[in-house]
Image (tube, rainbow, N blue to C red; front, side):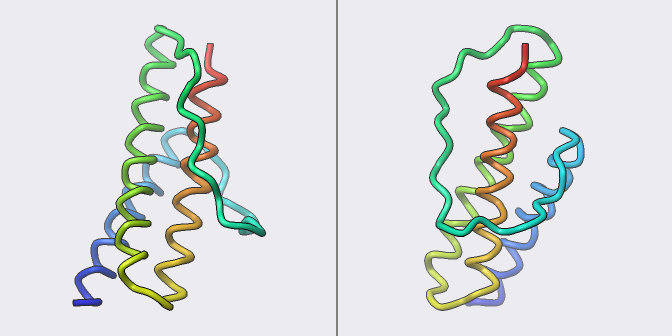
Length: 103
């Protein structure tokens, strides 16, 4: 049912937004011109408590982004779901950078 997929996408998106705010990431001002790539997870993570918390939030954001994109792929030609996927991946990319830059 598209309605339940939409509801799940919205729920996951809301969780991403809450975690984005916790990380202090800015709201994405402009959408990316091309489909975003999955961020590189191969960075050295600092063992500090602050960085561990940052990376835990980043991991949760990226997990939700993956779930949103999986759901969106089932809703072919659904512009709203596609945009939610793009937004979630953009946030994942920014969160991963924050994690990898933490020291």
